[in-house]
Image (cartoon, rainbow, N blue to C red; front, top):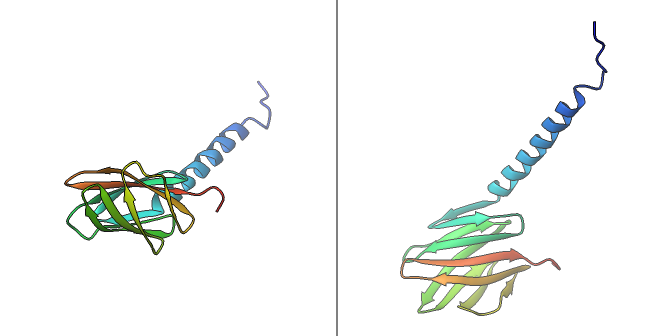
Length: 121
């Protein structure tokens, strides 16, 4: 008869606890984003929002709303955290409500912006 130490199941318990924590964090990140007329790709500190042109498009991310207001040529107006910003391609990030917002791309069908949490906010 072989005696096994009583501590044998602990690695399984730790692994299960770690998996549960990772799953909860992943669900919290996913639950933080929703959209209408747009799609979002979010991480812990930034989201890329792709707005469809020609529709009322908005997305909720990090507890704030990002909304497409209008677009003309390579200039786009968005509202983030209640503040309107006019963005152009190649421009440095504009700040709104503790977030840095940049314009990633503009096409006839879509507009893509990146919304990042400001580390100092």
